Length: 372
Image (cartoon, rainbow, N blue to C red):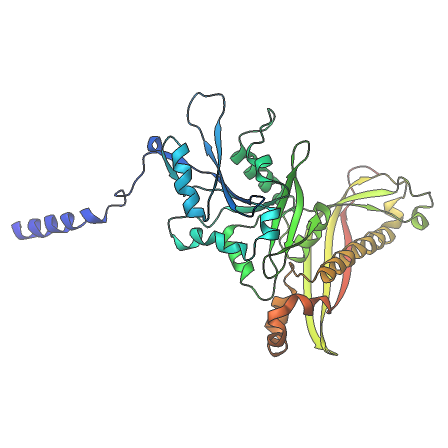
């Protein structure tokens, strides 16, 4: 019995060094950064920004700071001089990049190295691109808005849930930057009178800023990516030839119940060919037109499908003109035509710009509403 007790005691003592609290940081001794940012000065020196919540009865609920630093790690060291506790970047929820930083800094993604190299840092923060100087964002205070971290996280989540923007995490951005068959994309926001989500930033394979998709265009992008929320809404105009009116008030709004997207691929004539079939099952949630849907349901469904097809074709045309592929058509090309894809993998954007993409859209009304 004594032998068993001695063995048990030795086993318990050996567990002492394995405790998970040896490197703990007490909350009162730490300054927790929830939002980080990177911008550049007029002479192209990098600036590090941070937003830290203030756990006190002070009127200002967060502290915003900025320093000029060569690297993100050096910036954290400089920020320590302005914080009450030891600076801690392990709770970052949002990383904001200025549009100018992304446009004018070659290979800007290397500044994110600290998050991947140090395993204690999070790789799940949302990454956004801000159209303007980060001073506007970090020192923006509105009586109608919560502190900056809560405001940004709430805006990103609500826009993403409505499929009107993306919610790219740092880990997902790392995948996109190294994905040969897809180009990166980020949430884009700005501050005019108030802070607002503008849509989605489009980047090329090198991470250079190319263009932006509006929020309605982003909804179409999310449909093609098969990453829509529970429901997607569209407001469409019925043609005057169907309604028999001038068309000024011939609007109908639909809310999708099911969305199915099928993408096929082929290679012929020296270029890739993609066939996309999008099928919507939707409910009519608003109708300004006097058209009787009971008598003309099929005609209305075809009219809605035609207008949606035109919108998808305009989106694909814009992407091909800019030579970017946020949808990921290149992933299909690699999966089914690897030998052909291998020849253009280093310049997929150019190859996608020359591809033939055919769009087909089907709409079926599952519900016309409670009133006639």
